[in-house]
Image 1 (cartoon, rainbow, N blue to C red):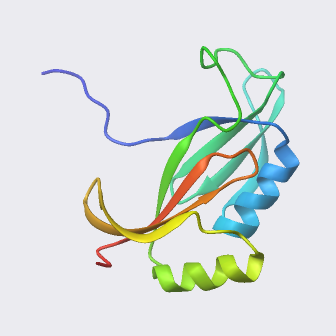
Image 2 (image 1 turned 90 degrees about the vertical axis):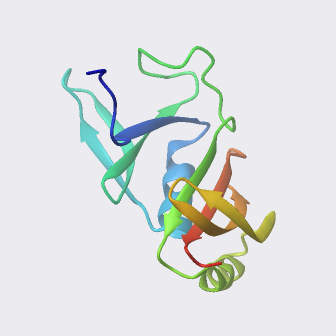
Length: 134
């Protein structure tokens, strides 16, 4: 039997400013920013949501091992939400966050989704999708 993975535990974003990134993802997307200790005793920051997390590396102070070319603004991420897209539109309008594209019908990993696209402080493309909402 060939080994295979079954879920994503975490990914890493290289960011210009950890505080600004934490504030954005908490306020805009409802994630929880937490500082955590790693095996060597150092402290790091991550954004927690569902059963996953996004570890944050500050540009110029990345932790090894790392991507070959860690760069703020190079990610394209899609997050699923149970909240209808029209409520996301209202939420983003209140916060003054521009919707770059959408709502638009897309195909997610598990089927049809309705998506909107925004940018985080580093320019990463963030897709917020509501599953089965087409």
